[in-house]
Length: 175
Image (cartoon, rainbow, N blue to C red; front, side):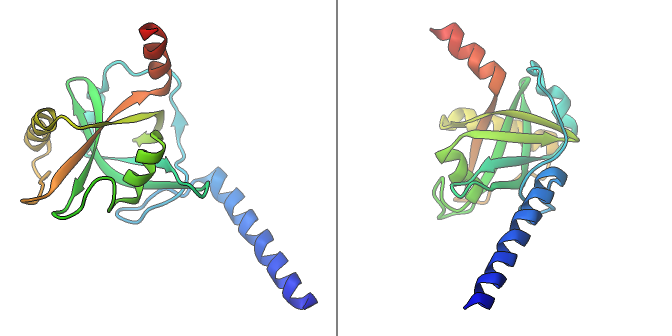
């Protein structure tokens, strides 16, 4: 029994050490394989015009999981009219937020980190439910990037990034 306790103790220590190392080095997504923490330079000032993001087809997004480890994926980067939107394509039969772990995380806790290039932006994702607006953004994105397609019967789930500092300024101004 003592040997079993020692083995379990060593495993727990090893897992903690690995998580600490990954926290500082990052372990972002690679292609379609999800990751953990994103690393890069955090941009603290609010971005007023996201048109620079037109040079990027994808971005990386870090969400918060219920089990306290971050979950990061690569997804569509959609700049539209100076704002930044994040897209998630759903195949026919899937219903938001199910079918995408990161969408389930955002539905539960909308606070995210977005990585574009080597820069990190913190904010809140707001799910866009207006079908006309989503269609307009999809049409503009198809014209911009070409290959962005939604299967017949599928859907584009669209999220607007509101930066954390901008979100608190908007909330304060609304009061």
